[in-house]
Image (cartoon, rainbow, N blue to C red; front, top):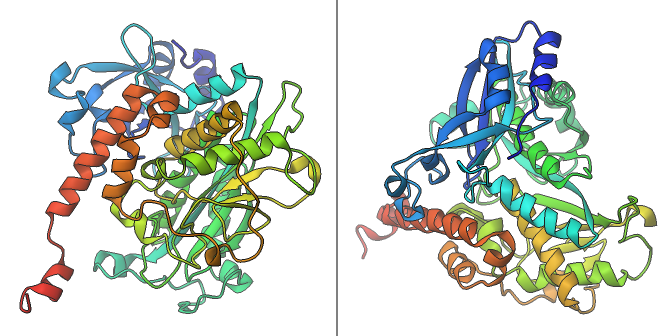
Length: 453
């Protein structure tokens, strides 16, 4: 069983006498953080002995409702699991009014084995398989998000917020520097928070819609840490937005007429000395091609991992920067797998399928697993697309939540790579959530059918 080092907690307490409380949380299969607040005097004991959390915390759908089909509720009497601090994640929570810090938890069974339902262990499983084969992942995660006007959100009609000038952008205006200046108080606070938290926040751009932004996170040679970065970054953005009177959303498609928000996974593989095995220029090398081949071959059955909600499927449209079918290209954003431009030593792939609403642990585990699948099976990805991929790629990915779940349930790849029990639990949660979603009758049904049907 791995857990936190008490000396890490003691050093943090000594260096931050002002901190009064600690948020201790894990991320459930739906990507939601759940846990406890500990007082200052409880921190060292939590690092020494862990903290118990009920096993049902990993059975919840996105609404927080139990999914009994997981076998993690009454079948086990909702017994506790031992949750341990993740080394290196003890950091500030600078958006909170009460002086606070936070740390990530990961769950273990009573015998010390990893809890199958904890999505962080799915990344660890795939990462270990890659390392055993002599491949060391280098990973970064990009997340797009929207700022929403708080009052409009509360009224149920989202709209872009006004910036510091009072101007409310209504045009697309991709990459507009003025938008970055208008929201500089919020963005500056995000960067300050990232620095305080040790997050490698890098390039900032205004994206392809009013109020949509992307901050690039730097590459990590530790895949688990890259996923932890994404979780901590989302919490930071949401917390700072609320302090500033906005709502930040990583929903895949908050507006019908504007672009969706994606989670782009950048990845390469290094050898034990840190040399990039994808390096080169011109045509992709054999190892990179096989990794791409695995991503393309498993993309359809993996869509439930990349697009975990009903709203996720509104994002996949032609000419939307979101994919419609498996393909790859070099320096081309009209395809789901892009080999990036740049210096030959930094060559890597970018998987552009996942939405910003996907669980970073689940999405990253699936991407890395697909790369390993392609390498082990020497899967040929075919020729790269040249030009407009939307004019050449036939739509073939599951286009709805029920179809994606059916494809995932039929998959041999997902349980074999991510773990049979994890995949079973994840799909049970999403299936129950899907059935609950479609049992509701939305206002649009009444508007279309109540009088005329």
